[in-house]
Image (cartoon, rainbow, N blue to C red):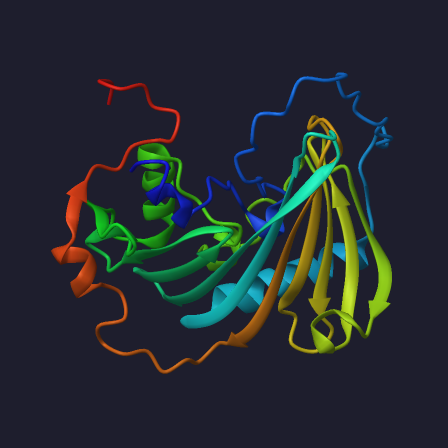
Length: 272
């Protein structure tokens, strides 16, 4: 897929609850003083509060048990301006998913709108403006499709783990820190439990619904990223029993559009 169509995914590698959440492909920073990463203090031995881990697992179990879901995710990515200070870029994803093999993502961004469809047999990336579409065969499950989309065109979403079959898969031995922060009554217009987690690569702060266990917001900082930029995803409009039209996971317009290939954004011309 070309860089224009890959806006459908914004080149984000994201696994929300497993600390594998990635950032939008950064713009090249202007010439200037080199950034020095801030010090990171992690315990030599893992310090994981059982309460925090229980809340994370409860959120993952709630998501895994849902046969279908719809939600809106609004992602904010920071990237350096000419001042070497961060600018924010926004992407809104309207998501509909049905397990084990259906996904639709309608994207509004600080750039061209895009669409992504997966019906269990093929995946489609579509940019309505120039009427361009990339279409390819896809594996038979959402989990495998997400892997194939990333390998083929660096496509991933900042909610990959929310729609994965096992959202708790990343809560493994590399977790260095997990603790309960407290509650908020501001985020998501509801009461949320706040948890902080970190491993050797990233720190994430999560707001999880105190009653429904659903994620409302997550903020990430990558330890090896110059500038300590923040990457935030807000979740809205949760529905775990949505009414889904039969034709929701394909697009007649996309299938009629001019075809292009799925290609990674940094692929060199002439190479697959």
